Each structure stands twice: as structure tokens, then as C-alpha cells.
Image (tube, rainbow, N blue to C red; front, side, top):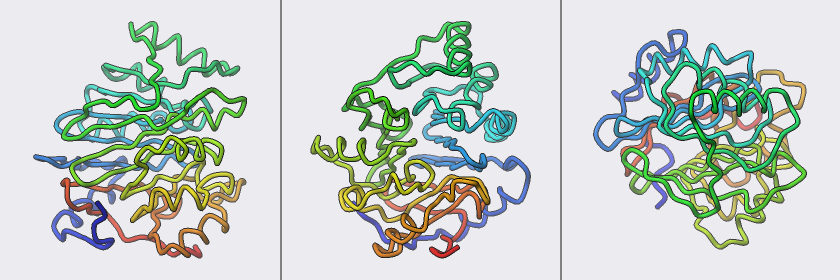
Length: 288
């Protein structure tokens, strides 16, 4: 169910804004009662999302190795001790790098990943570190649903394994009451079309754009299938890839979808109470 696009709870917004004035978000953002807090952590040109709900923690990707210490500190500042679900969307360095250090710094109950072999030393280190911590990496299938906190998440992709690492991304749709979020990893248009063809519900309030807002992701078909009320782009300031592209930002502008960007705004936090979603800051300009 879609909610109004501009719902800002005054006191909560003040708390969220204050929490970002300090390095690593020293003030923890509480997800009380039926709340679910979604932290799109600023990790430069990469992706790391922390979700907290009902005393449980989910980490979707961990940014690159150069931001690993920052991710660990951010989680500690949010009073994370156990990661109930660690999800590695795929095994590119800008998504996987920080997860290795998180495996060594937190209790981790479940690790979900994509069922393919990457050729990098980082991939081997990640798998070996999981094994050393007595963790077996699980490979979920499309449609698998997991209870989490006050809600649940469902795996939307990949439906198969591709030679294109990006299209192997584990995509999830996270639900809390009437609110929903989609985390796309680096999924590109081929994966998007596969998701659409399944007929599964892709509707979401918040879409974290695939591949950092690249032109190879966020097709018109996906936007029309998901009809998000907000979009989030995780990318590095002045990155050499030109992410997010003018083409992608133009689509969002044409569909009047407000955008948050970690390169411009730092860590972006959304809090869902199951009915409405509040943000720690206002969306940015499409032409930034």
C-alpha cells in the first residue's frame, strides 16, 4: 500500500538528523515497538544497509575493504552484537569487502549469498572466514521468505546464475506492515526482467537502486512494476563511473520519485512504523 510521499514525524526526524551529526552515528537510532529502522550507510562507492527491527539485525552488503572499519564501528554504535541475517548480494569487492570484518567482529546467525564462484581472493577469504566461524553460507531460492523482526523479507532474485556477476545479485523485498523496501544489489536489466516475468509482487515504498544508479539498471519496466514512493542511491562522491547517471535520474524525475543519495547526504535513515515511513533528511534535487 502506498503512503503519502512526504510524511515527516517531527521529533523522530530531529533525532535522526542529530544522530548523523556525529561520526559513525554515535547516537543509536531505536527501532521501538513495531518500528523497523533501515540505515543506508555511507560507504562511498559501494553498498551497505543495516536493518534493525524487533531486537534483530540484518546486514545487506558491507561496502568495500577500505570502509570495513567504518561499517563495523557504525554497527557497534547502533548497539549491534548479533547479526541475525548477513546477506551478500554478490561477490564484487564494493559490496563484499566489509562483510569479512563483520564476520570477525559480531556473532552471525545466518549468511545468505548467491550460488556462484567468484575468482577473487576476497571471495575465498569471505568463504574461509565463514567456515572458520562455523557458518555455512546458505543459497536461497526465489520466493524463499524469512521472518525478521516485526516483518519479513522475500528473495526476488537471482532466478539463475549468469556470467554477469551483477545479475547474480540476491535481491530482497523487505516488508513491515504496509511498508516495503527493495534492495537490488547490482542487479541489472536482465535480472529485472526475470523478476517481472515471475509475476511476484514487486511493489515497494522504497527502492534502493541497482548498481548505484547505473544506466544498466532501473529500467522503465522495473519502475512501473515497483512504483516506488522513494528511491535511494548509494554511491561515492565524484565517482569515476558517473553514478547515478543522468538517464537514471531523469527517469526518477519523470515519475516524480523523490531521491536520497549517500554521496550528497551521507548515511540516510528511514524508519517504518508499519504504516508510514519517516526520513532523517529531505530528498535531494534530481539535477545534483
